[in-house]
Length: 183
Image (cartoon, rainbow, N blue to C red; front, side, top):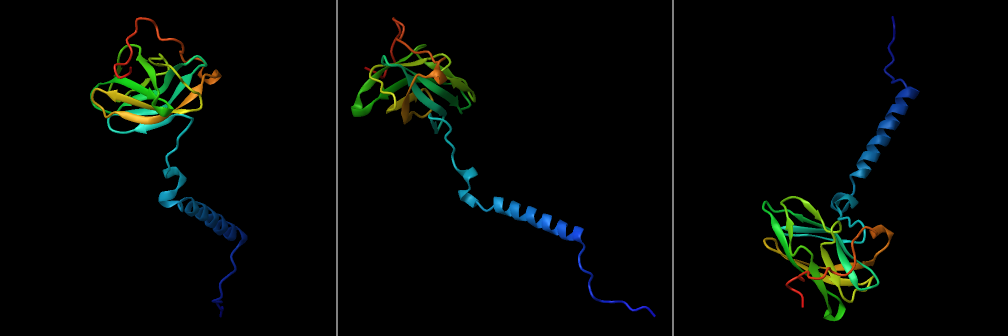
């Protein structure tokens, strides 16, 4: 008569390795989920030196003012019209410390913003500044639109370097009408 042993056999080496690998994978997966609402992936990320403002109607994305040593500057960044209809950038003001205003010119007069599209301002140098521009400082920029809510934020001024070599700078062409909201 054969006797059966009720004692369990010890696990083989391959079984022990599988259990170890599954445990390690499970631990890594659970550790990645432990950030909760404060996880880094839930935090806003501000790449580069520019500022971004996302509010009703039109977004201003990664905006800076690039300036030369002669008091000329250009707004660099993108405007994204998040509305279902075309909007228009109608005026811009730029104010430095102590309330000193800078002359602003929108070269075509206004800038059309098609719905759900980005308009890159650096490509054309359409928004130009002329006055006391101090690289490294922040100025208050205010932008008004025909339909969207106005944008008002602090914006950094950066010296023209090789990174911004293609940005058009220089005096505003003669005969150009300045932005209506500036002196």
